[in-house]
Picture (tube, rainbow, N blue to C red):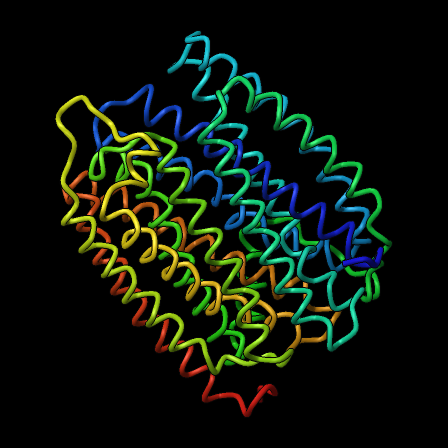
Length: 429
């Protein structure tokens, strides 16, 4: 953490994750609580926002992986951080308009969704770099720890952005996202050079052809196929949970938006805890041996979370629990512990798999491997978003959707077990 080869990258990705979540959650929570007034519309909007943010990963990850392998990664960081300033200016205008009630449906919401889509593009080009640059700047025995720190830092940033989005006025959030983007650009300029390790090759700008070629060139390797599919199923589960939280808190727990922010914050804390805990358990070795048990634990906690939600007595019509009243509720502690268990096991499951992607391929191929992973992950998350929309349109209550999410952890566990069996200790064949 005190080395220039790691600290500027850590700060840059932390600020980027913070800004993403401050902006997205400020927007979603304001729209869910102030604009719409029924569970179906609220779930639909939350899913649409998630899907729009993820879509660029599906469309552009192949291009971003090629650029990260062919260009200086530090230079790309500077480009995307400069773009973030412009994107957040557009987002700030949208937040200002929706706060003032000017053109809410015709101008403000489209501007917000456009900025969110652009932030998805920003994150698509930054995503392969934040993992692929680690083997280039860190020693081999530091990569798992560095990956764990990046992952834990990401979720601490998500935690901070999520909490802030739930407690500050939306007009203040508009100012914060611009300031954060400016600081992120300054930090990004301090990342040491990480030149390409490959000889110059032509870049395929045809996004469909290059995506198919990239995924096909990665997924035929059994160990990578199993790791990527395990991560993708995990994020399909995660995306549906994140979509469900705001309408679930508002309509099932009948609580204010600060409680929705608290839920997202607890989720982020848990993944940060799991990220650090699994590094301690594995003692620096990259292995999937704890992954099957971790994801089964995650599924069991989701089931427990469902049953506590079912037992939760709603408030009288028109009334909402404040954060203080929620914390005083006798079921608040069990509910929070179930959610913490979901996310802690989730962090223990996914972090070794990310480290696995970057350490079992040549360093010059790490960015493309992460990009291929992002394509498949984002496809799974978009499908998860569409499933959430479809189930809501079909009239299935959000609390019942939790059980379907829990069942998705079973194929996750099966994939992770196959990955572990394909490996002999920390070295994968």
